[in-house]
Image (tube, rainbow, N blue to C red; front, side, top):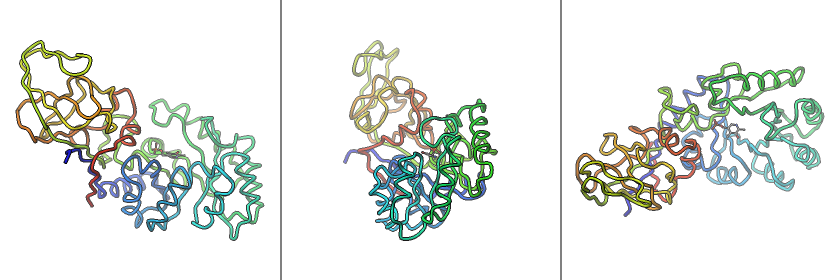
Length: 350
Ligand SMILES: *Cc1c(COP(=O)(O)O)cnc(C)c1O
């Protein structure tokens, strides 16, 4: 069998949850949208179900998959419903919808609920992607508060720049949120991973941890407080020794400088590894760091080896190489890389 393995260390997932909950204080949603950022939503939710205060997914379909697999904790739908008729299932499966625009609010109020529901009311505090404008927020809040269908309103907003070292935008959004919430009772939720790790003024009643839960720092680099959950590895399945000044791979973009041992490994952009991570992207051969040479192909890539040995283990990222090094080399984010990994055998360890 093709030896591309994607190990998911569930003990590390639980450790990261505890760490982030401690850092934030209060309650913490485990954000497991997009198949838990490529880690497998059902297995991750099952691993966290005993300890997490709740989960967050993007949409109804992701929530139903969790409920069908026995997940009982609260589940927030971060984008709310897309159609009014989804509210029937929101009730049936006991989900917590976000309400972030007027049509969602109106269809929520018009729905005939059997029992009052907890809702998350989202403010656009400056990101300008989703949410009620600050000047419309109190009206939306009051409409919900006066409705017999509402049990609890959790006030929320989302940061645009929390993963940047410049705090100005995050501070402004926090101020905007606090001003517009003046006089509105109830729990609040502001912090994503970056704000949980690095912006305590955003710590309120509920944190919402995504990337950091998987052991990845949103600031790039490595954060010793977090333990990488995913480890992608494969094996050398062919090798050759090339003379100096020989090209390697598509486009002949890399030439050997000296006599070089080039290993062929089973992983490529068809597996979600970014094609833009080319020559010099780090990789580990039997625990020792080396590099990719030449372009990444669809099903395989070529790496520089110090010692020979078909069958030797290669770590694409996980313990010796951090996924943030790969995203930096590829000009993308770790979010995108872990979400995209596919065609690998996923192996869970407790
Ligand atoms: C995805 C998402 C999060 C989690 O963000 P991370 O940066 O991965 O921690 C939090 N809140 C909302 C609204 C989201 O959509």
